[in-house]
Picture 1 (cartoon, rainbow, N blue to C red):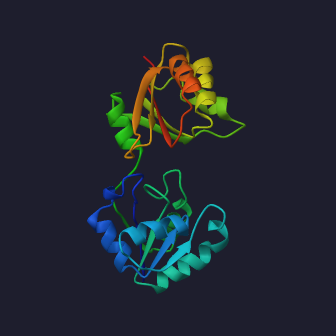
Picture 2: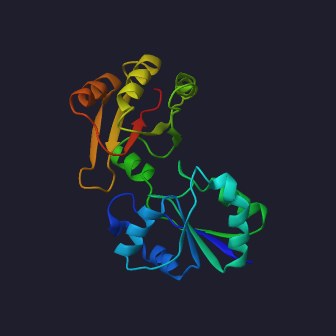
Length: 223
């Protein structure tokens, strides 16, 4: 019986990869990757030459059964996403769930994720927090926002630079002017930044300074 090893990969700075992750990427029989080109660049940087197979949102349902067969036949198989920990707003959940159903051993390494450094660096309370992932692109956005409106713990969203102003304006409309937030950009990369303010202040800032890169939005809980 084989084993699936979930390996987080750097979200920015390649020095964030762990020694344990490098060992598993080097020694495994096969790597399932969200984008084989992205993973190949990482392996080249690490001087690793190993077999990579694409496993992503567009093919995971179609190849899931085949993946389980392959994992069972190999000693160790690694699952990675483009950046961070697989399954956190990235492909991987279906494969992990199916492995559990088939009693396949799992090993999940600790490692890079944007949520924790963004939360800690924001200065908002971190003893309790609620992670929402990405809001829907179109329908259901306001319903999702209203569902967290009364939470007293810190709230975390992932957002794209193309939708952050729309999101801030919707949050202003639904949660009010007084709520504090922090827009965290490019965690662990050269242009990492933390911008604090109300929704209206942040919306005005990013309207004037067009945001780039991956964003984590941290919102103070309801007083």
